[in-house]
Image: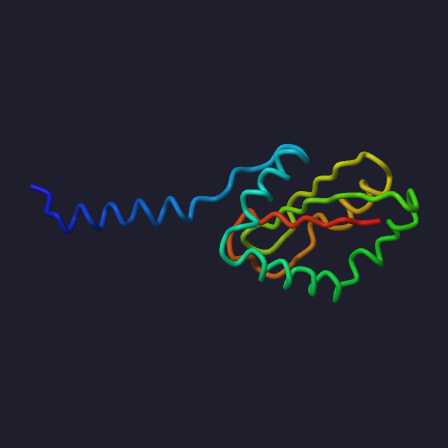
Length: 127
């Protein structure tokens, strides 16, 4: 016979597992945007984005890439996917222009601070 305590621990374990379940992987910009829209209200999201931006600025990722010189004046939206170790594993853009391809390549594989959950989507707008 299973005790009430064992059932309670089992239910608590399922609840914790459900809350810690990773967000689904993304296949394209629209699915990455949907992932971003689901993640932006989760605890720790805003704080991590601030940390991410400071790290990006300290590394001069955008400035050193040379990407701003491509398609001058064109706005490019990026969604970067940060894994649990802090590495940018995927990058998606709303454009196929040279500037978008350049920024995607410049960020992919870069080490950032460890996020509070993963995959962690970060949205950037570059002009």
